[in-house]
Length: 366
Ligand SMILES: [Zn+2]
Image 1 (tube, rainbow, N blue to C red):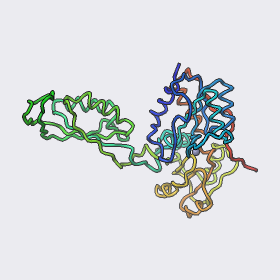
Image 2: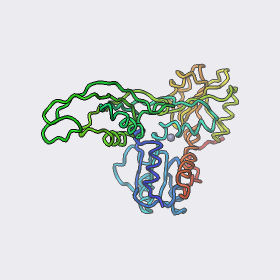
Image 3: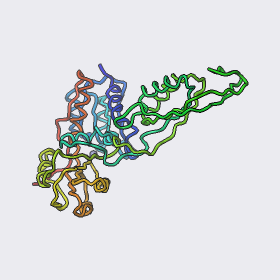
Image 4: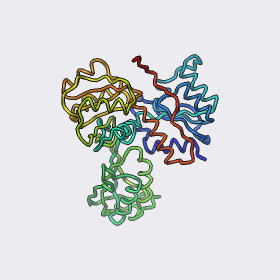
């Protein structure tokens, strides 16, 4: 048996909560994470039909992409559709958990799944996110430097792209004086001690700060460990919004549009004027991606597709790129498949089902 918290903790190791955008509200919207999980429905949105489905299946967890409480709830008005759905969930002891922009901001997430279905290679993030990493500097007696380094690597620090165990060390002389009551590893109380030390520097992702600091303190020989943690503005191409990759070979624009129609099961696609050039490099963003049109242009994409584009957006490429709106729901529909798949792989005996209800609120009259 698994607790709801086990499922949540697993998802948050893949898409840490701190990667959500500032405006977002990911995490548990309602419910008891300590309860035993007896099954989960996965959907893009919390709708009355999805709640029915969880109740019919006897499941007590609904995992959604879009947080049902987004801009805050200021009153419990039972006539408000969102409030009444959440109240129904609470009455049936169903927990609702949202995994939104934190899943948009990891390359394997929403956008990685879209790229996988398009067969794109050499994938990288379209708009890398800053502030995802910090630098740790510490000072260790030379004799213990290797041991401390190993412990910090073990906790997950020092990984950059396709490299791990990255660090920098420089030799120097540290000084300290143990005061009354101290229990120094080396040196004598009341006297300044000089020690040959190594200054060790690492970078680590913000969500690993607790294990990295625990590892440092457990492996470092000093009673009081000297260290600095510095926020970094570096951007890493695995973390951030959107994705860009390339098709195995260039395809004519109309053929790519047909491919989008088929893969994303849509009857119509809105697009900017055809450029007349074949498509090889494709940028994409599931959901509302108008803010990344310039990123796609800067990275020389032949096509950028997303959802929720406005009239004026279609002027922006001006012949340099094909821009397409395939629909918000259509672009994100495979997020439910992705979540169902990773949860099944991790918890093979746990009942997790992608919703069987069609939850797209947008309809097309063809
Ligand atoms: Zn969305």
